Each structure stands twice: as C-alpha cells, then as structure tokens.
Amino acid sequence: GEDVEQSLFLSVREGDSSVINCTYTDSSSTYLYWYKQEPGAGLQLLTYIFSNMDMKQDQRLTVLLNKKDKHLSLRIADTQTGDSAIYFCAERIGGSYIPTFGRGTSLIVHP
Amino acid sequence: EAQVTQNPRYLITVTGKKLTVTCSQNMNHEYMSWYRQDPGLGLRQIYYSMNVEVTDKGDVPEGYKVSRKEKRNFPLILESPSPNQTSLYFCASSIGGNEQFFGPGTRLTVL
Image 1 (cartoon, each protein chain N blue to C red):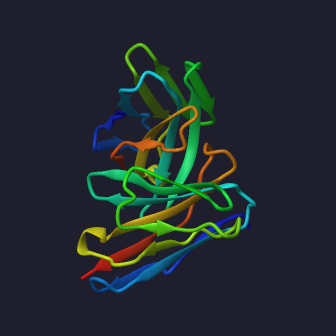
Image 2: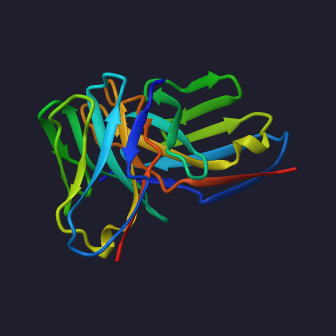
C-alpha cells in the first residue's frame, strides 16, 4: 500500500531557506500535495503538483519532484516566523479519492 | 466568506453515548470527507462523499457513520463512542478532490 514518510522536525533561522522532504512509495501516485497546519487550525493547502511535472514555483514556495527516487520537497525561501507550523506531504492516486498523508514535519523558525 | 464549519469544536463524552459532529460548507462543493488526526500518525481518512447520497469508506471507517442528504452538510456519527476514538477530527470539502478546504477541527475526548 501507499506510505508517505517525512522527517518530524526542522529548525531554521529566520531569513534562511527551509527544505522539507517527503518520500512516497506508490509510483502510480498522480497528485502530490503540501499542506500547512498552524496551531489550533485545520490544514491549509499550500500547493500541489501533478506527477508529470518536475517543479512548481509559487512566490516563496518551490516544489521539486524526483519521480525516479519518489522524492518530493518543499523549499520555503526567506523563512519567516509566521512560517512556523506543521507541514504535511500527501499523495493521491488518480481515480482514488483517498489521499495518504505523511505524519507531518514541525518547522520551527527562530530569530 | 468561503468556509467549512464544524460543530462542536470541543466535546467530552462518555463511552457509548451517541454523538454527532456536524460539518457544513458554503462553497457548493461536491466532494466532502472526514479525517482524524492522531499524534504521530498524521491524518487518516474516515469516510468521503462524492455527492448527495454517495458515500464511501476511507482508511479507518470502523465505528463511524456518515450521511449526505444535502450537498452542504456531511455529519459524522459515532453510534457508540469508545476511548480509542478520542482524536482531533477534521472535515474537508473540495470540487474534485484536489484543493481541499479544511474545517477548524473538533477535539473529541471519550472517557
């Protein structure tokens, strides 16, 4: 079955870039997502990428997909304290309505 | 304002006492789903619905029921709650399963 793995914690200094990594196991995954969860709130979709793309950029966010290694990353440029949150990677196979989420990476941004 | 609302936000109950968590969206979305979030496990889908009167099981449906009589509402029913259903519950809606909008969450404790 599907499995999505993420490291649990990442600590960066304000102004630096953050890179959050994710690996997945199902090569037929069609959609790959990054969500952000702030304390006490629901998940907010940041961006998603189709598996036929290698990269997607949206302002300070860059998503890179390495299909061969089944590796997905989220880069946040000029990380700010407001970026402190839990970031979830998720995958969904086309035709399925059941996404598989990773356990989340807690990003801590310190001054 | 486009949103997904859940009620109640917090609930403490006892084993075996039936409860319902309501979910409502005002975006005319066809697709709605319920997740539970547990520490160290990320999000797991309980049930989803692709339209009115169309529901299907997610990864962890045992002990839960849902109904979709109207497009905007998707209540989650626990007929006989047990302590292992203590969790943080999220409702989400979307047009086609991709850009999901999440509710603020319902923290349920079953004693």
